[in-house]
Length: 252
Image (tube, rainbow, N blue to C red; front, side, top):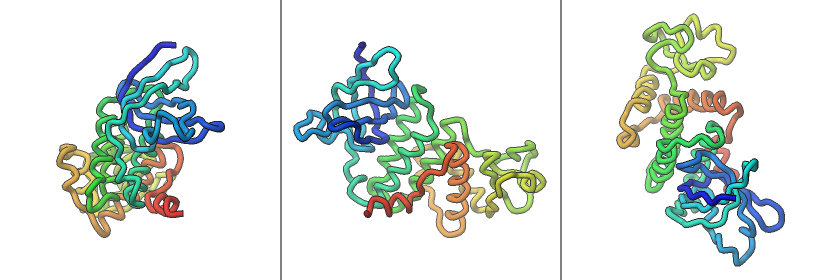
């Protein structure tokens, strides 16, 4: 049972048995993995509060051959992101970020850029005046990193260059489609304004360090949110709880 070490961000944690926890991480060296923390729910557990969602940490894990579930032996806290668990909107936005990572990434497929992007995304929520927009921009960035970059330069179905008329985003096709192709989509397209198309293109192409400077309100905000929500649902294979639903859950 070899010992492995990795940096990781906690995606979710759930109770298991009478005293243990099953924790899902996105790790820098191993991608998405799951581990069991024995006795983590006991009052005097040495894990303390290090297994809370959103936490960035260093892990010591034991790997058992033939078992996908690691044994968590030690956790060193790197960044707690405690403020994200103290305000409902921030908590909901952070939950959306980790939920999307968990839904669209396969097990055991590491991507150091994705790991750092998740850390940057969670960090961007702290002190943000518009955390919901930060969560939206993160999802757009994540789609690109995982090979699902929304197509905005030509028809995602037939390859025709340019967009004529009102831009239409097809969640099934993964991008904008021309008018003839839009009529053949099995799922209704999202009709978008030119401003929404421009915003999405900027969000995709802009330097990650600068993308948080983007702003969107009103019609542009609503259209881009609808398009990305639909596309994430297609990529994930299921509808994820939206940010406003998560906020209402945490307020109970």
